[in-house]
Image (tube, rainbow, N blue to C red; front, side):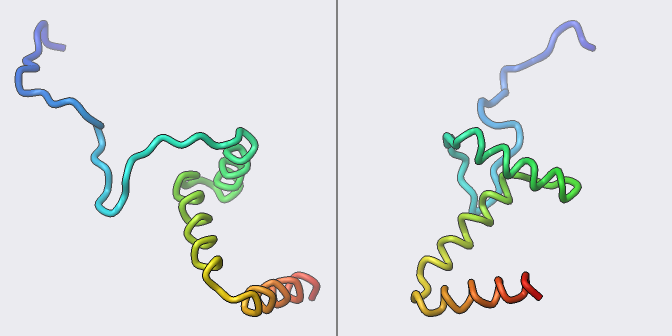
Length: 84
């Protein structure tokens, strides 16, 4: 280690820059919700629980625009797959 460091050209801000197309925010989630996403990542052997939350929100947005009939058909297909 040096005895002194020159911080005259230092800049404040995050150490790791935010990726293009992403925005850093602060969000409050229920403890149980956050724990569930962390457990899913742990069971999968690693990854990012934040990316998993982002994917869940993206899927919800995509499905929210579907007509009710399409949603019902999707749910029935999923349940039939599980039952077989």
